[in-house]
Image (cartoon, rainbow, N blue to C red; front, side, top):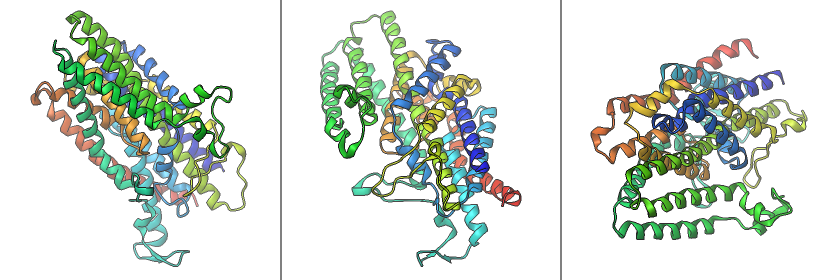
Length: 447
């Protein structure tokens, strides 16, 4: 039990470090454009990091918890993974490199699990309890097909989104920038497009909303027993889609009046919209990144139960990973602690990375800030819906590159960008190797 408590504490410390390591993702543009002071910006971001507690479910947490086969590992594996992730995060923070905390944690967990499999079984095959021959690399969930044609999961999918997340962010921010630029012209075409987009958004979000009858199905209790409206509106799945609608409709409303504003009025309006876009991105950052630590804690509890058969876990650690037909069960204090830790970390800031994200990639104005943060937020909501633990760092960096490309290719400082990409590529393998070494060291002292 002592080792389990140590893992939980270290996981929350990692979550705190994640907060100040990734604070720049949400506040770099609002600081660079002087919409908020650095202190106001971190306070703003931290508030919405914590608010994500009431918005998001546990889809990403489930994906992270299943990175390795919990039936085949012990607590030393998870401890080694968390220690390696903390070390790499602190190193990249010290060097001012906006690497991915998410991929650090995934890489550390997977690397320690592989090291454990090699230590126990060697490189040759072994016969498992199912009577089938297995190999050391099968301990990690590399790829798992989605149910009923849904999104597949596994470490390979997470690795694929090292490329796809920034590309999605770049494409979305590029399109939003083009949309805003055309909306500033005194012609009817962009306004027709905007109205059509508003109608399409309302229709699409309406089709995604889960009705009250579905919410209370199978005895599930809604958040507000006394109000059908609030029960539907504040259901985690519904909140995300309503937020998407709110973001798109707000930007659309601005586009409809953009051409009638003078330069001063437009800049003032864009700065106000930056508050909305940065809040939306901070919400996505908190929801996406906090769930990864929840997944690690959940995996640690399940591993403890597997390695201590017959032990009855107290209610405060009553965690259940979903089976093919079950649901994710987690005591409320775990998500509350994770969201609190990441919000506290964001309050601590991360000024070296703010400088890189806010000025070194490309010069950012309020216009670019709105486009980049809006694109980043929508990308995070989309990937969270698919239960994919993507990097908020990669997403916002891609979004900033996307708005830079609307000016000209040379507006992006590609030398800085290439350095960041190398850091992204190396994060998972370095974290995995480091976690493997930590595992072998810990195994000497912890039986």
